[in-house]
Amino acid sequence: MKKIIIGSFLSLSLFSCTNEDYENLNKDPKNPAEVPGSFLFTNGVKSLFDQMGNTNVNRNVFRLFAQQWTQTQYVDETNYSIRNRSIPDNHWNILYTKVLYNLKQAKESINKDPKLTLGQKKKSNCLHFNH
Image 1 (cartoon, one colour):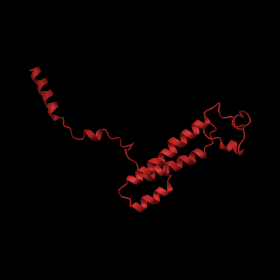
Image 2 (tube, helix red, strand yellow; image 1 turned 120 degrees about the vertical axis):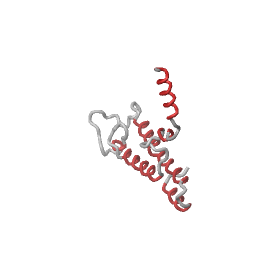
Image 3 (cartoon, helix red, strand yellow; image 1 turned 180 degrees about the vertical axis):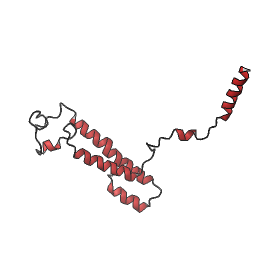
Image 4 (cartoon, one colour; image 1 turned 45 degrees about the vertical axis):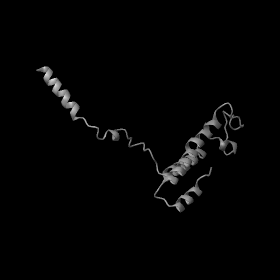
């Protein structure tokens, strides 16, 4: 009797499963696969302004170079000695990964958008950098 109950339970559980909506379980609602070009463009411009206005001397030392700021204890950056730390690498990594990549993706997204006319695409491409 026990084997019959377990067997019927297993067979009912197998037949009750379907393949419907399993594909939707793999979609992440918080990280979309495609982002509109306007959002990418705005994020690229914001990242550029955030980087250039950043007050962290580990990422942006241009205020020290322009002598708007100065340092009293650690004067390496004020004396243009930035090779012992990875300040140039940090700066360019942020510019390439956050700014230029977003602008490139925005241009590609706008060119692929079927809702925009050719004139609108040309106008938006004037705002982006050209390769």
